[in-house]
Length: 152
View 1 (cartoon, rainbow, N blue to C red):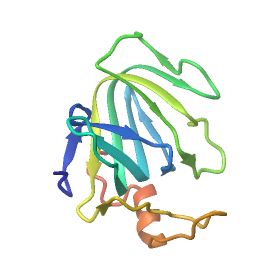
View 2: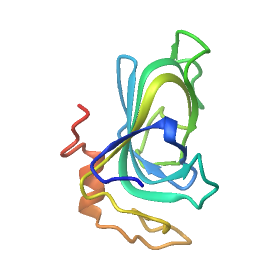
View 3: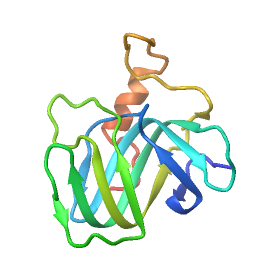
View 4: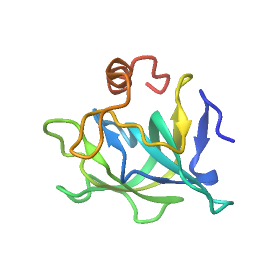
């Protein structure tokens, strides 16, 4: 069971960002922090449906390699690490180099907010051609502005 307000390591789940939204990615040394809306988690021990987290932060530490779709090898210390992740989704920044990221790191996980909602339903932070926004815009903006983020 995923608990709100907790940090969960990549060891216990597989994450998918295909239907997710992100903005204001921060790179501090060899640590990357990505605020995500609608990030999907799959339990690696069960073949279950994804659980969508309405708001969370993905934390990638001890980055060995960071390649971006628009620019290869932003960080290139090694091609070996504990986790090899491909992250993307819809970047809501007007202009950003952080688009479709391939990351190899030795540590990381997902930080859930105290009031994160976890469900099998999609959380939509903006109106799209196929779906209407179903989130409080203030809560979404607080996530992207790192309000109450204990990771910084």
